[in-house]
Amino acid sequence: MGEKSLQRILYAEDEPDIQTIARIALETVGNFTLEICSSGNEAIEKAPGFKPDLVLLDVMMPGMDGPTTMKKLREIGNITDTPVIFMTAKAQRREISQFKAMGALDVIPKPFDPMRLAENVRTIWEQHHASL
Amino acid sequence: MQASDNRVEEHLAVLRRNYIGNLPAKLAEFDQQHGLLQTATDMSVILANLRGLAHKLAGSAGTFGCPEVSSAARNYEWILREAALEPDCSVNIDIIHSGHQALKHAVAQTLLLNTNEQCRKQ
Image (cartoon, rainbow over all chains, first blue to last red; front, side, top):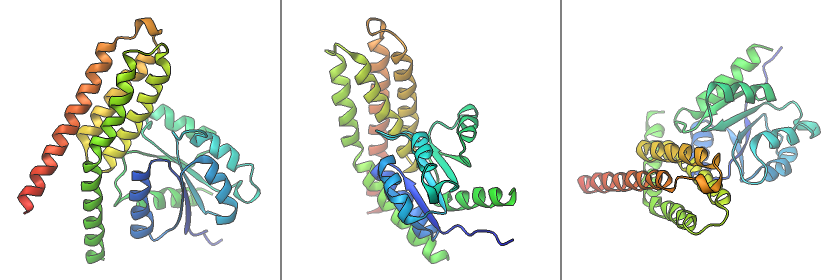
């Protein structure tokens, strides 16, 4: 069975500075096709059309937070099974377990190294597919 | 690959300098909320606002290579989280003030270091 390749990433993050650096990290360094959304609501609006292979969600966003956004994305037909990775400064072991119990693939802690982010995302993706 | 990596790192260095240059503006947001604490009738909203600012700054400052600011912001976030657990009349303003001052000091140090780095390059 061929492994699904990771090409398209949708990233929800409300902080403009992080958006800028993430675009470099994922597009320029990682060569991913990236859609950045500034809110959970925007992610829900854009995900069906963008059809991401993977969704990155900031946990703390105004309005709809990351976990709520993931729950809403799961209700969208073609996004139901799309893997989600949370990105957060709240990356203690207990919180990571909680996020995974909610259904997230993994958690990438903030701050992140922009030169390593793409590699980290790929590693999580490959580990997930190796376990299927 | 090496040349393109170098270009990326140069771009990140520019972004970092810009981010550091904007730290005073970010600090001003904290100053504004902190000032409201003195006269607030409901501190919980202001503490929540400050905590949100601190959380975001802790993440972004670390990502942009400002570990002192990130650490001070994270510590301030912890102080604010603890304060939010207290009823308004028991909130220790002095401890919140100390966290705010530590953050201002970290920003000042980072700005000074960045200025010195730029001077050395000229």
